[in-house]
Length: 379
Image (cartoon, rainbow, N blue to C red):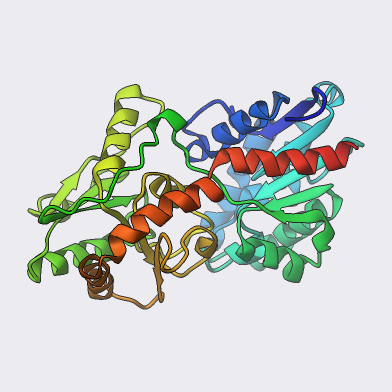
């Protein structure tokens, strides 16, 4: 706990108490900061009428130039976002916390300490998440990123991948950087690690809202392969709206659609699916961190995914799962799962996943590390 009561200004365009925002990540960060004894107030990033007009102009330019202009990563919009912040409210805060909000603090002038948090840098996102971006937009975005990383008191990164980029791409001193892994976006009382039990059939979880980026077809191929070699397997698909009938009607697929964590019934359904599954199969092509890896570790689900982005901080080979090379096929994933099942390693990794969750992949641990940074900055 903090030695004295402080007020943290939580800078965000979305209400941090909304579980839907950032898949619940901003909500659990808010709660973790409260748990260390801080008063947390929302400093809203407002979308003014001027901001919206400029956004329309950039949208028109995107169509005209056949490029993808990221309006939020332009200097004009960054300045407008910064200007929308309530200066009086900021003045009443002891310290500011800006998760995923580099553009919103770009032109913010304040003597208050600022902790910036991100799971990636713009340099990493180009040609990874962001494609067909005009060069001028990339230049402005990198200027915004460098300016913010230089001005903040501390930058917290969610992975070594992001941390290394901040150092190498933006030349920021490691003295003001820290890596703190995310936690599971599930309430503690709903985390019930189960003993691994395989009774002639395998239940595999796929969870994500972007079927293509998350590697849905590869997951299907892996489960098809497992069934073909005699391991009865069911693929439970969560998060995909309007899943193609060719997939949804497969005999080994159970489709649940999108489950809203703000809806109590949907939330209970999500928790029950996680708890009954044997492992997570998420061959995602691009991932900055992956909260789902924390959630599955908490519930004792080994994870099978690609070795990409910031995943290596969340999935440790042979501990709570395996990261396969990015060129691995569905058959490769299926064979790896088969090998782990037959050798007993799947059961062992289930136990180790829970241990890893308790050691570092939880919001309590995140809050404790944030408390240390806050205390240092306010000393």
